[in-house]
Image (tube, rainbow over all chains, first blue to last red):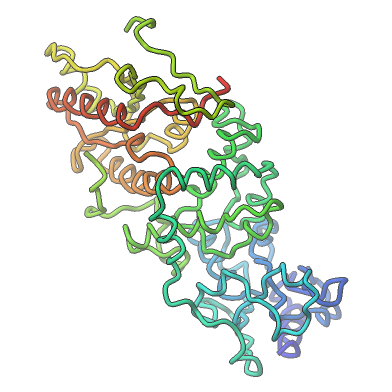
Length: 294
Length: 162
């Protein structure tokens, strides 16, 4: 399938349908995959697609406004592209999506463990909550006939961990997050890596007014992590990049998934379901639940 | 309210001793209320002009619409040691801007559940619809709110550095 991928990439560059292709190439360690930006036909030979292609490349799309860009995208990446399209951050005509069938990518920590063959590797947690292997939106699909059966089985109940945590007492919950957030060094890697965090000026960087403490203290860390998750409500497509980028290992996906579960329960809304869908907080329903309002 | 009437509840950050907490009967919570200009603020005003007595624990901030209230306002209050936050607007269908409270309702449904998940007492963030004619309802609401937040106790987690 890499052959088909490279062939299509060359064709797109040759016919000038795109000016650049964003994809994956083998990293310097010979195992992992790193992002690559291809503008010449001969460079297309470097393109790969396999279980090591963890990154969500859609984050790079908005760095090239007005350019025709081809992008290699799996299902979760495609959903983030859809959200960006919904929010008018991208033009559909400017991007060419080379969809790839995905049956799960590896958890990055297993790379460091020395395991090399795909059979021994652990799949990423996010893939256990994901069902479809074919992207829901693409301009060209590279099918993956040879590897179809391998991969992760979707979990029966993707929110069971969240429900378990919700059942704990309020003190226990606060203690847990207090400890987790106390490690936060406010490097904002979670924000930089997130395809949805594109504000030219983030609330965390504003000083007039300063919305929350900029120091890595309890108040600042808690406010930052709550507002980061809140600003992703109805937009987070659970690509898991924030958690992967976090240098201190805060389980950020557990906050994102909590909101994902709530908006499904409250508003029957799923982020990135389709290009025509309106952003969650830019629309409303007359019958939205209001049992919490007095 | 005379400042001396409010007992000092500045949290003892490093002691970790829960017994230092003031007894609940002496605790007078500080509550910040974001009131929409057209309904709730007028309702609170009516309570005042009707000379209805209600607890003075609430500090009112007037906003054009409940849809104006940013979740950051709520967080900012809580992080600065406020014991409770109330967002109050027009009843559904009565919004001066037609649909502002619909957006607020959606937004705060998510925020309320998120704060609870993070471990912040759900009684500390409340939302209500109070119309301009509901002066009595406003007074009753504030009374109930104060009782609830008294039960929840002082917001000891945050605001210790200020």
